[in-house]
Length: 394
Image 1 (cartoon, rainbow, N blue to C red):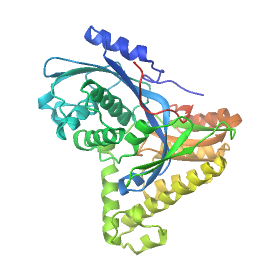
Image 2 (spheres, rainbow, N blue to C red; image 1 turned 180 degrees about the horizontal axis):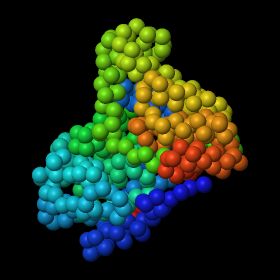
Image 3 (cartoon, helix red, strand yellow; image 1 turned 45 degrees about the horizontal axis):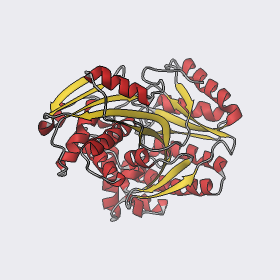
Image 4 (cartoon, rainbow, N blue to C red; image 1 turned 120 degrees about the vertical axis):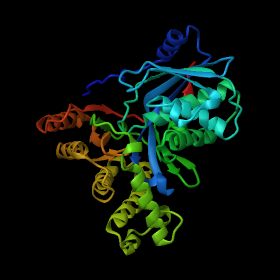
């Protein structure tokens, strides 16, 4: 069912520890793993203080780390195709976005975030990163990287931060250092994931409600379809959509769009584009709650139509889909999927499809054939399992 890509092979704690030893000639003091995530429902709603329903993946980013006696931060990675130098060096007291590029923005950005709010991260450290979370696939590899590094920094410096604080620091790194205006969902899902559960997250109050998500008991698989069209959120239309949502809330005279319950209310917005953006947020918040109710009732199959509705909304109202994502969704549904939608920031990345477990192979084949017929690259397709959140592994 899967087609492997560089960096997609499962990693173990031995990989991160061995990579650290090779890079730095000594043993790591700690190794933390933080997972990517699949967002079952609620796309872009977190930037309007709404609700989301993600779960943590079994695939993780691992950070092996140890302290130094000087002021130097050295970060390395064993990832192939990272698009920048696999080893970076910076001074802990002189970190700025100009000192980092590519993957290192998320490592150095976390250290910068701790310092920016007054935590005494005043010595250097060495960090080695390994990962089997596909990058650019809408599965939040950046948040997984941030969270694994944040846990390592917290331990090495004895800071005693709560997971809520670590999520906020990781988001600060992504927003203010890496320049990606994301919400808090990705970091929260990575740090708080529970095996066998999705998390109903209120991104205003940060209240987290675990919701049982037993796909196998229902005889279902949730397929992730990585289109191979990789995006960078900072250079996509993410910021434009967020700004449109803020303008919509101002025009409706509400603090944010999560305060609008009736989709008809957005029709009073005169600008057609801003109206469509707002309509997606309001209707997707409603779909999050509907999906959570189905999970709580054990009616997992009933989520299928909600997924398809969400894709139409993302495609037509939020306009963040692309030809490959639409082809994946259409082919999956045509082959019998109960529902499918794009996930993540859009303009590429992945789609998800809810399928009967005994039809997973047929659906995957149909998607692969559809991509081949249109001249797209072969997708990577694999089942997603609700898994545990970030944790220490060595």
